Image 1 (spheres, one colour):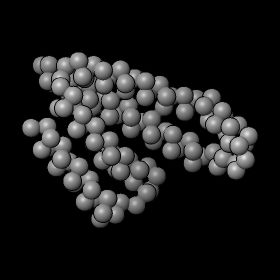
Image 2 (cartoon, one colour):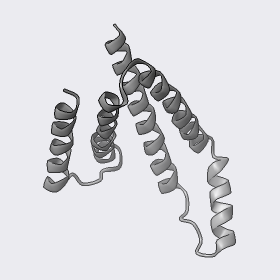
Image 3 (cartoon, one colour):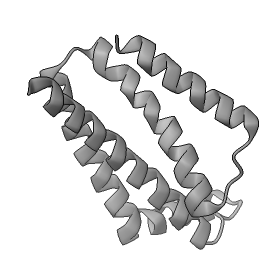
Length: 123
């Protein structure tokens, strides 16, 4: 049961991280790019930081950290940490499905290598 719960916490950490990254990309895409001048960049960043969607991604990052702490309380770091590499796989899939970003043969090969690494590293 302990191992199952640690996997649930690892999965929650990954999903919360995925949510945060997708929301940030979405909000960056729907807002104007930051101006070139330093004052304009600062204003842009402040606007983004008070954006409710961006705030929700910060909350997701915080909750993900809490979930990660719970995962680590139930398993070894050397076992749990390789699973964080799945975030690269999840981001690749989400970016293709949500943003229409291209999935190249090279990216697919990298994704397969990551999954293989996780399988080997978690043994």
